[in-house]
Length: 428
Ligand code: ACO
Image (cartoon, rainbow, N blue to C red; front, top):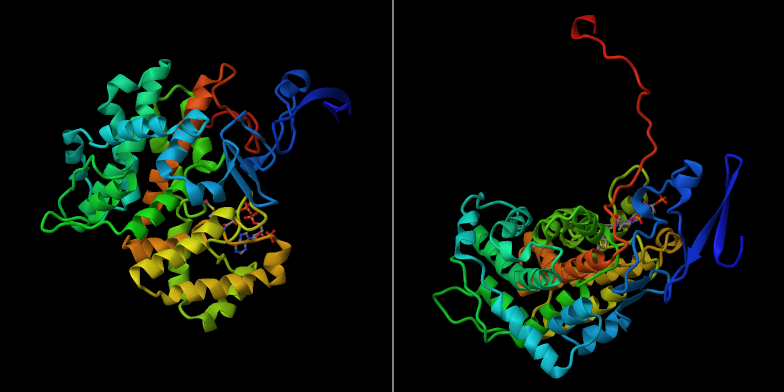
């Protein structure tokens, strides 16, 4: 193997494949010509060793616990930035100037209302529908309303659709919540911040004035920042794959929402909080740790482990600090936080979790904060979807702008029957 190529010997054939380097991170073997030259496919279920695209948006070093957006560490962004600024950064590649940021925030604010007719969609859902089911449906339906931003070959339309999606997600999410509790929808207000507006649309009622608690607004904004993008995770890859066929952005984001819903992905914070409730008090933790280690028991410690992080998830660190801030501001105490801290401590000292490099992920603490703010568990993944929309749309736009982009079409190792003749019904 030369310095910048990898050699594969298989079936008596020798193939040299270029090795490409990014700015940081592992090099990649470019196998695009492999099938053409050898008739062989690679086999990588779950894409554990596959880079599916070039991307300049987010970098993760899972072993070191590093997460960078456009080069900026997540810890610095969480401390000094805002969700609006992170949105601008992810979409445009650079931090905005002060004027650039207020212009961007103004644009997003002006897109927060949804077409009035969209509100009639909600009545088609059962009141007890999971809000993620509503999100999949209503966000997908946006493509039926905003025809002037579905031409993906027009960069300006792509930008407008990105702004619309980022702006309307909180409105749609708050409406999903309001519908489930039987309260009237609350319209957005242009004098509020992105996050303040969302809190008001979710928790305000017409009967009285809603006061936004600054510590809660800050915590919520930080939670949005922590979830804004995460490289080529399952939902982002879903958005890219859906978009690779030329589907419109609203349909692609609806596909991302569907993928995010799963308990191994965005649904994990709901599952983590439910698990903490089930465990209850710290004295019951050892029993659950034993269950998590038992190969014959499907139970896993939710909020623990990550496909990429084999170290402490840097977002979990910020999340743990944010729990304390919210509790202090709201003057609340939640015994589940003590249970979570103790569970983390015991797991991190247990050889099973040490050997498998299983650390708390972003979802381990987020449920505790969201619950303290007043969100029901069914809304947790919805909040994740609001935040991740900017990552999805930035990644989608990057893909569409890439001249080398092709429709995503993986191959397979076929294990079904070989060709055989149809047997008439009377002979079976
Ligand atoms: N509890 C107990 N054991 C675990 C856990 C866990 N939470 N996570 C992984 N393991 C074990 C597995 O049993 C497996 O053991 P084995 O090698 O003896 O078979 C080993 O660790 C590796 O696990 P995989 O499932 O192969 O790892 P993978 O990278 O595919 O999965 C995942 C990552 C899905 C996140 C997994 O750790 C998990 O299910 N965690 C709980 C759910 C969760 O918190 N998801 C949130 C992810 S973050 C996000 O989406 C924002």
